[in-house]
Length: 202
Image (cartoon, rainbow, N blue to C red; front, top):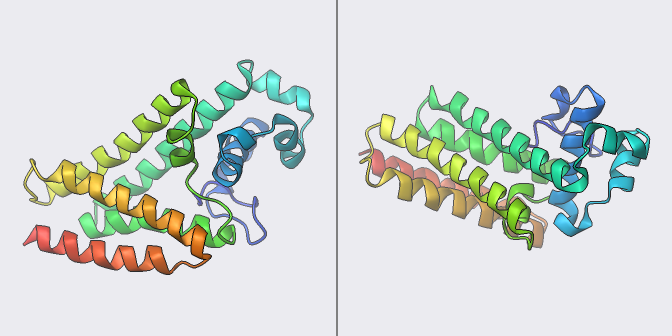
């Protein structure tokens, strides 16, 4: 995710290279804003200003307004992170885990710990339709990781539970990093998860 945003933070996120056109900039900007302010903090006016486009462009590109924009932002971020996991798949389960964790490390560091996971922010929000979409994204990450684990010889009955545990642990670590203004919780969580995955492979 952080690799999609580029230029949105002072040091520049590494995901933003794909956000070349107006519509893409608004999608990634919306994800960033939700991750920073929460679902209720998404302002179409502020988003248009930060993207450098007229407010009317928002409704031109997203006739469904705020709901459509958040939905597309969450689905886009979800797909981007899934692609990172799949790239890591070729190098094995630890590499796939690192690819997943590195997204959050970059997001936190690039935003000076202001931005959390936008998908989790929506999944724990109070808008049922958006919450359902965010839950699908979280489940897709678990499914991708479970597939990597199964391919590596981990018991197919255990792989989904292990993937769920890893996603839950990393999402929790991201929140702690924000609270403590330090990357240490994520770093230490990743170290422990490495041991767990290594043990599961034996």
